Length: 245
Image (cartoon, rainbow, N blue to C red; front, side, top):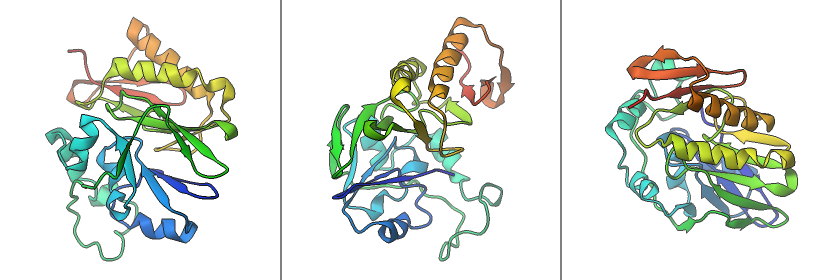
């Protein structure tokens, strides 16, 4: 399950992530707004970009990982992981009307324009600031609605099992990104993540910052997990991380 956010101004709307692309998210968006819609992806893993092809204005970072994802070029491990997306034990309820196959295909899409770190997205009576937050993937980003104290975090933070084990994950870059976001905690009212509960407390960013410091220092124990991974558990989240080496 991925939470997508539609942020609506007086002149324009931003759809932050477009889901798996199994059901048609564009139909839901059109019921909510008649304004022009720009799609921004928190990162380009398959479960966040599946509905991109339903929109003409899709903007990604100008990053090799983003460009490869748009062409459907992903690692074999990610393709294998995505392949079981529609298995009966991974779907709540029946498949959407018209979907008869449980084979999941990696999505592709056309990028209309690139976005950059610190870019301001003007929506009319509302503005969103692009924050590049690499680590989970090289092209991860967050959106900051400073006026309303809202931070849309994508997969960079959520209250659940945080994945830091993919081949494209860079833990050092991730740690630096969390340091950047944690510094915003005094001006934030809520975090809006892509997985798990759709609202989280800003203080949890500081908790994650401290957790990463503990892991780095070797001061916290872990449970062994499948594939040689390490599972670190904390109060509001856990971290599933690749083993050393």
